[in-house]
Length: 375
Figure 1 (cartoon, rainbow, N blue to C red):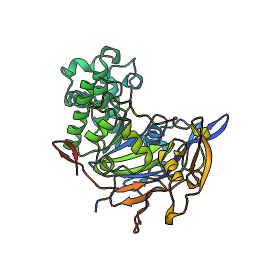
Figure 2 (cartoon, rainbow, N blue to C red):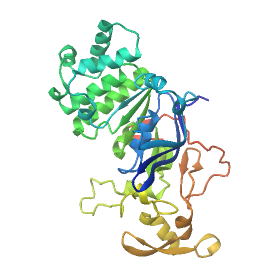
Figure 3 (tube, one colour):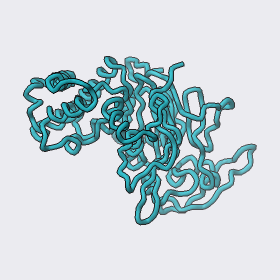
Figure 4 (cartoon, one colour):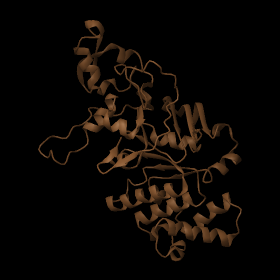
């Protein structure tokens, strides 16, 4: 059995505010294997980007700080490294592509100067060799006339071109793990498809792992091997892409799939998830999804185990009084293994009897059929 390249174990991150400590990432655990693409999905504000920044220790401190947990790269805890040691990891072993390249590229330096700086920081090469590597990197990401582009400034490039330049910079040192934080959100669908195909091609050629952060389930279906669904600071479901799309088990994941527009159902009203992601400074008690959850309402109205009524409590959800299952309000469900390739955090999803794996980890590569994701 292969060892994971990266492991997150009970990672928690907090920010000090005038109103007290808020915790946007709580007890997050998962593993990424070499050559694998793991996607983190969820609504804005669920903690995806904070999780990614925490891996590279890029959380601004103060006010942010890691409250607990471990980030292991080949068994080495990155949270225990000195800042000097961490600089060797950033860009060298782990690289990151940010959502908006215009705010990530320095406007007063040319594209070439910025790529060369990253190369010389992590590789023992001459200046001339660094420029040759930079030119090759631009060519690899499909930028025509790379010699001329190296001398241009970020504002002289289109959005898609800047994103390609960011990818070239990230991959110039051949990292083992690439963190892609919403890499195609600001791009049109044609450029989006080109960028994602480029990442898949480079992954096949180099064997790097990818942590893909997105809210786009279509991107997940086309690119991910394994998926973690985040809600209100926690991972609430973790599974292979095939299992997640075939049988989502957490009610939040089910609601996400129901909200996807269907091309052949133009006459139907689009489904929505009522309410919004709770503010980290005011999380509800118990399961954080219970104010928006259809399942805890349905269970409150249905017989419980052995035909006995499910204990209920009355709450106000999204401005409407309703009865919900009492355990959803009282106790936060742990993330438990619910199948051979599936974890979920829901009181109403039974755990498997031989659950001996505390860390969600799946050494799995997707199988693609003519119809898309296939088992």
